[in-house]
Image (cartoon, rainbow, N blue to C red):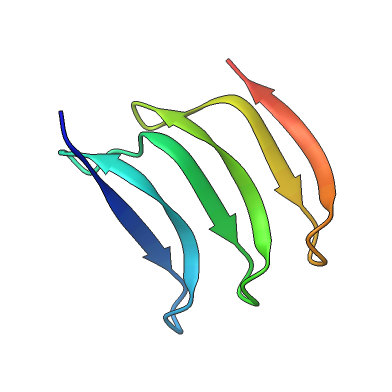
Length: 71
């Protein structure tokens, strides 16, 4: 199954998220999410469109705020 990189955007066109999707457009693999300012907001993996493994969330300054495990 092939994957392509997808970008999600805020209404002003700045990128809010980026990562791979499968042939059906379902999130799969490592994704990054951003604040409107462009600062990294979070990272984590998707499996068949669902959050899996350890996700990291960052504050507006880009500092690690928390980690969350998804099973």
